[in-house]
Length: 348
Image (tube, rainbow, N blue to C red; front, side, top):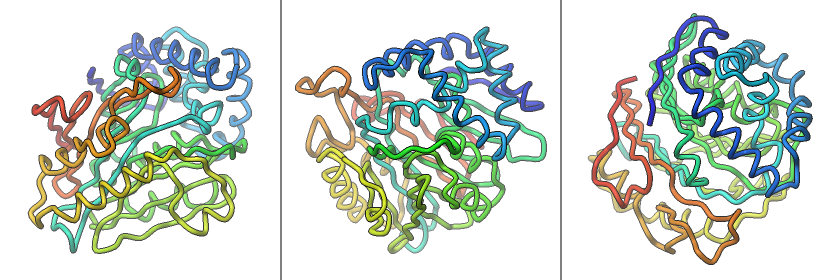
């Protein structure tokens, strides 16, 4: 996975992202052009027109994000609308697409260390689009995150000890508000847990998703966002888990989701596995949970299912474990069951 160090103004950060990650940006554009056709019969031009519907909301939310996207476009030699479309990819056509991510957070009293982790399950071809970004910003925390080329917000943590994971939710709910990937970035731009929570807790998000937020303040929370309602799920005994279905009863009343059965299987499996952990939790213990094969191949550690339609096939693209107490990130590229080696351990 290519690592890129970015710093400066929003435009400068974007420009370096585009220059150094040009290959990954273009790979993302190719992948999502194909996916939009497959999932929604949308041409790339039609997708760009849908992305522009979110422009006013982004301008009101964080105008500097538009500057960063413009920088990426210039650096990668593409149009601004192309990069905007990547950052609204979940809203354009993928709110009704299958997903398989499993996320978890653990803190006191279950563990003296605050852990945040997940498997990111998606199209295997997007492995070639992954970037590890190390971002130094003016008047904001420094960020370490894994993302797809061209997308400015994803999964990771910052040097203030705030981290976030993502689970997609299968719904057809969408409004011209702030794309969820920019909500993820806003969380990572936060100095405190409360600031991070406030950034996404007022129905600002354009489509439903689950954000698992944690901090070294020993606080964790599940936030199921949508453009019409936002629900919070508090931890039980210092533990939170989530897969790809709506869990908050209040959210279930206002947003209809259509999850695959494996989402419920994975939630039960991760719940059982966490209960078996000792109090002295280590990163290797969490990677072992993420390598579980209950209900294989549609398991926590997901493998391509040959019985699925081609556009429904997916696999675990990477596993990430964050120690927010020590501000360390550990990564495994691909299925965690296939590798005993951690790709890298990085100090935020």
